[in-house]
Image 1: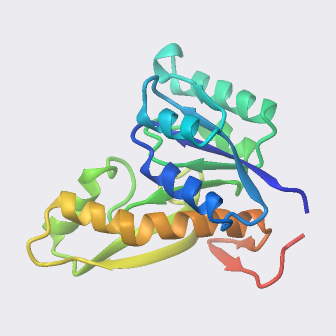
Image 2 (image 1 turned 45 degrees about the vertical axis):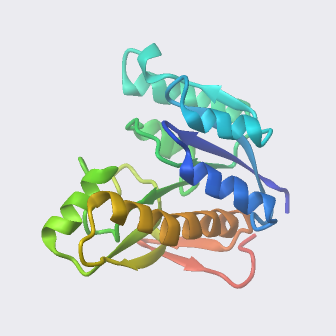
Length: 214
C-alpha cells in the first residue's frame, strides 16, 4: 500500500498540526506522511512549526481571492498538484465550498472541539463552542473527528473522546483540557486509521476495520 500524502490546512497557531507532527515523529502515523502545510494567512505560527519540522509550507490567503469559491478552486488545484491523498483541517478558519468535498470525498478530516451533534454547526468555532457548553451546564464535553461533508460539521463521525467539565471551568480552561486530552489524541489516530485504509463509510456511520480496506 503506497504511503498516503497528507496536507494539513491551518490558519493560526497550529497546535493540532503540532500534535500530528509529534505523532509522525513517534512513528504513530502509520502509512502516512505530512507532505504539505497550507495556511490561509501569511505569518501564521503554524508555518513556523512546519518549517521546524522540515515540512513544505504554502500560503493560500483568503484575501487574495474574490470569493470562498475562488479560493477553494485554487486550493483544490494546489492539492492535486501536490499529489495529496488526505486533507486535514486543523484550525482552518475559512469556509470551503462544495468543490473541495467533491474533489476529496471522504478524504477530508476535521477536528471539532465538542461531541457532535452538540455545539456544532455555523458559528460554533474556537472559544464560542466552550462558552456555549458551559452556558448549557453540560457535565462532559470533548472532541470529534469527522469526515467533512457539504453540511457544516455534519459529516460522518470517525472518532470521539469525552472530557469532563470541572467546577469553576472557564472557556479557556475547558478548551485547553479538551485539546490536551482529546483533540491531540484522536486527530492523529484518525489520520493513521485513514492512511492504513481502515475506515469504511457506511451512510452516516464510519466502521473501523481490523484489516485494511484495500
